[in-house]
Amino acid sequence: MNDTHFQLALGGDLPEAADQAALVLEQAGAVLETLGEAGNGLQLLISPSYTGEGWASWAGTRGLKAFGVLKDGDAPWPGESVGTLVIDTAIRSAAGEALCNAADLVLAVWDEDVAQRFGAVWELIELCRRHGTPCVWISSRTGTLYWVGSSCFEELEPEKLRSVITAYGSGPLEPAPDTQTRIPLLKLGQTLRRAFLNKYRAEKAETTPEKDSLLLDSFSMESEGAGCEPARRKLLDKFRAFDKAAVGLNSQYQAVTYWRAVLPFLATVFLAVGFYAETILSVTSMSSGLRAAVAGTGFLIHGLLNLYVFFLSRNRGVKEKQRAFIENRYKAEILRVLIHLAPYGIGVDLRTMCGESDAAAFRRLAAEDRPSEQKLDAASSRTALGHIDEMLQDQISYHRASAERYSRVVTSLDRWNKVIFTVGFVTVILRALLQFYVSLFPLVGSINGADLNGYVRSFANMAALLLPGWASYFATKMNLCNFRYNLDNHTRMGTRLTAVLNRVRGLEERESVPVDVMGFVAEDVSRSMIQEDTMAWEHKLGDFSVTAL
Figure 1 (cartoon, helix red, strand yellow):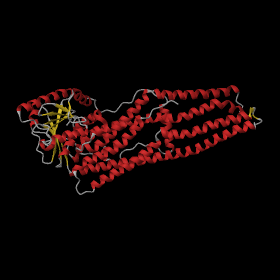
Figure 2: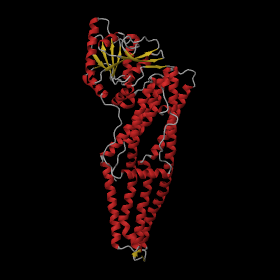
Figure 3: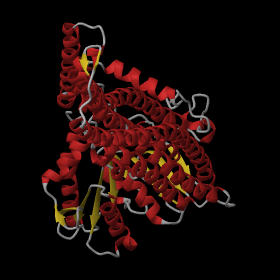
Figure 4: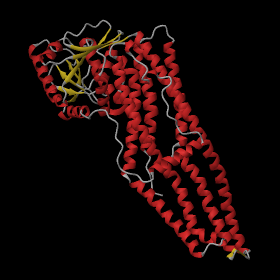
């Protein structure tokens, strides 16, 4: 398959009474006329468990083709079909979950009797409400159109359908581009940060997946079913595009945070130069004019550093790069999960993960090369579990290696922070005592013509200014550069994903893998890798802003 049609799922039966059926079809036609604004036409999603055969002739008159979701015992769709997903289960809701995950909109006909089709129509409407899947249902009794929102009986307003069309028309799934706004000294910041991390062997090296075969060019899914490999390749190409864009933007974002972490101490150093250079350098043979020039240069650089941070705090490009990095990284991780689930027909609740607009773009991408014949049975479930196992192993290795890298940085910064803070605290106390001492017992004499009393005071003042600033430098670097957060997060995720991996392996050890548990596996993996991991640092980084000194 290679289309990007709007995915419309159908549910319920057309009424037997001709006048009621005509009223329902009139209302269905009005909905389709509105949806025609979606652009590329419609493709139906049907399931014999939920969709009455009467819809087949209606679809035929409109030239609409359907993709079927069938469970065990379901008869083939009598209308024109473009493919099927057969789920080897007797549980009806498995097909309903698949419809809700794949559909841009569900259109159902319901006579307001919960028992209709043995409760199937009400079940589908309730699944839509629970998943947040846009759903319109037509009362076969009155012809009234209802919208499923916080309740199932909200009268449909045109704006509701237009919001669905807007989400569908959000554009193709492409990486957020790098802003062209220039940020001075960005390259220098990248170099300094890289040098700092290399000192602790903490710079992330370029890596390729070692255990996750689905991310390797050398692997092929041709033996796992017709159409699986094109679907994997399409998702893999997108994953790599988003991953590459995120890595490039992350380097720039980290350079900005590194600058913001080190500049306060640098500014303090040059401020100290401005205040005390003339006195401290008076013991040398340097001329008074040159000493004044050094002091003036210190004040000037201090001002320029403050101006630079002010510029960063007001530069729109910094925030745009930050947003683009977060968006690209988040979508790359969603694609990583989809690569391991979508080719097997295992549904993912995209709306929960990324909202309606982005979910629509991911659904379009997954539908473009969806295998025309898919079967989710015990054999394909076991194969999918094997690949999920590989993905989790690869991610656990990544998190553990990252935690080890950041542990070296945090341990060193912590140690230096404690040592320099202690020395700085003692220096400040000694400076206070010195003030009392020299007031009571002034120092007599000079050093190279400089007053000893003034010289000692200036030197002590400079030390009392710089040492506490140096201690805060280590703490600021650890926090603003997210070294401690990254250590804690990677450690937590390594533990969390190990627990998920153990659950997956528990299923792999079973003699037969129940198809019905694959939805729970998909939810477990998605929640852990995307909602608990990616979303956590998305909020962390999203809250960061460069502030003036």
